[in-house]
Length: 352
Image (cartoon, rainbow, N blue to C red; front, top):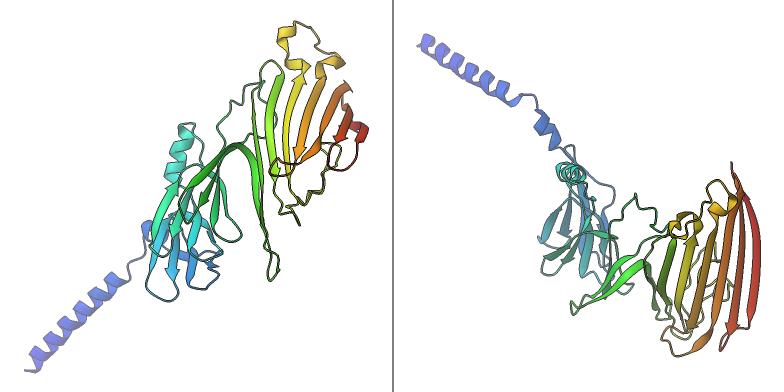
């Protein structure tokens, strides 16, 4: 009897050792890749009912998790990042990246690697995805979402391509109705609203749109810039360099309370690229000659008050290596805002 008990106990011990050996199997590379860590940009909705937090993995298969703080509702967005809640806590927008493999395939095909956008309605967990998005922002009160698309690709070998930033489509969505308003060739946008307990109700915007074409050293364009105001205050742009924005005379460095609508035309000319003139200027100072002419018509943001008009001219030349000479002239003629203003600038820039 004792012999049987000893054999039975030995069998149990052998089985236990075998199970322990299996549980201590060292992790594989795939196991390491699935290890998760909490990202640094967790975000809580204004009403505290929703939490969005990123989860990163060693294999770069990252995701954004959205969870209710009061219930079991939630969802996961693969490669989601940079979340933003609307002010009324009804919507979440987030950027959508790519896996390493997908990004590599796009680069191999000489395609741009643009991020997408996810728009999530929190009550229903319904999500819409939008491709090729450069930036996005909710309006201050949360009723609208602005989506700025990535600009179209340009040919880097085209010498006639303008040096200016290229605009792209801006879509402003009414989140209550789902309707979209689209603006073409927008270079930049911004929302501006009241802050904290400010008793003023302020929600203004900036819109810039341009359309142009370039060939043979000549780049004409038409543009429109709108900064809205409510009659008491208007959207201001806190920029250090005011010259060159809204006309060079700096009459509108502070936006009027009724807002500003700047309708303008501009033409740039570079003699170096004007082959159609048949001039042999290689090695001469005239080769670097650049000319700019612009004309602005200024109104209030609704176009009902004629502020005035302005003409701007520029001549730029490089007479010597490392020396750039620039002449600027601005002539503002007042109608119903400010006074006639004329300015002239002369500058010399030295570079090594």
